Image (tube, rainbow, N blue to C red; front, side, top):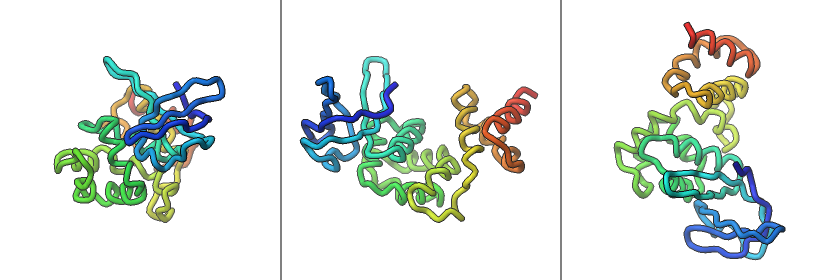
Length: 194
């Protein structure tokens, strides 16, 4: 629902910050590390709204990449929003992306609440799905897939309700042809309907 909030950071607490927009509304945003923000300074904070059975919570991020990584993490079985924030709190997005790409669960086990099974689940669920982020967090382009149209198409298919496994099976077949996002989606839908 929300993409970002521009406003004055009025309060900083260990787990969250409060940012007031120009209309005077103060938003409580849970963030990975609230102390990266400065109190009484105008800030541009990216926001994700998470709705649970009995909870409506706003999570804030320093940039779009951190927000995207958060969204990938909370889709992993066993990782909730608070665990995702704990993983992001160290600020080493490049290390996280590399650990997943290199199938290194040991790196992931250093985070609170992430045991061996959860670390393996993170690698299993996210391997190959962070390639578009690799370029933005500083990995060499040679290690990252740069086909943004294909990445967007795969995400669109998942948002249409196809499982990650169904979409992953199509990735190599679709990648063989260079196409637009729309073209990839059309080709994938033809393959999925068969």
